[in-house]
Image 1 (cartoon, rainbow, N blue to C red):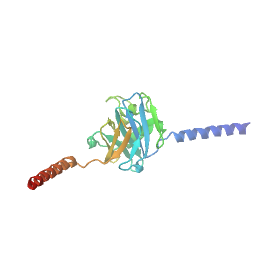
Image 2: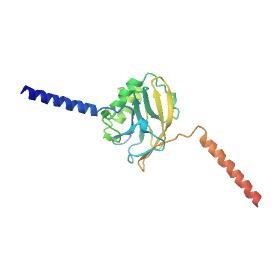
Image 3: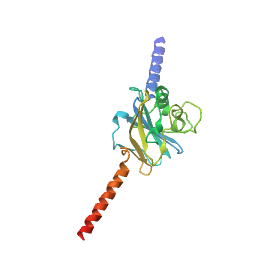
Image 4: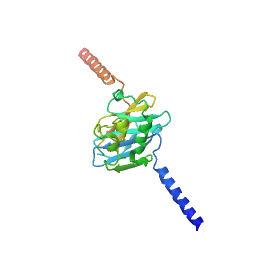
Length: 217
């Protein structure tokens, strides 16, 4: 009888350990989140190491009014986060890794694996809204309070950054979301001055063409 009970207890402990192991954030994964809708939507985009320019995901249409991407990587103590500002507003991430990594792991209770998604009530402490998009000054342990709000308006680029615990901020590229098609994409950020340079080049080309036409006449 005692042996049977021990076996049952061991099985229960093993099951509990398995459940606990499953509900653990995958180090280095990027989490996409939407807020502003009836429900929050969170999707595990997979590891940062798999991110490449031009990559797209069909995540679904009309998921919310704002979105963002966050993640953490133990190696180098890096926090990944998007921002509406192409310079991340001059933010200094020094010394913020430990607390912020815990916030990332809280999202969706750490239950997501690459490619998996979940819909949550915004009022839950592990929802995207609670962790990243509450009114300024709202007390509580959250990504927003320990770091910043990573959300941007749908239709705007979400500039992506690597933030090291040592205080170094490395700009990457940007995520964009088309609410009509439901497509999320990772695209290159134009170099500063590129649009204006292209405009000047286009104007110069137009002037040359007009000159050639006049000569031909």
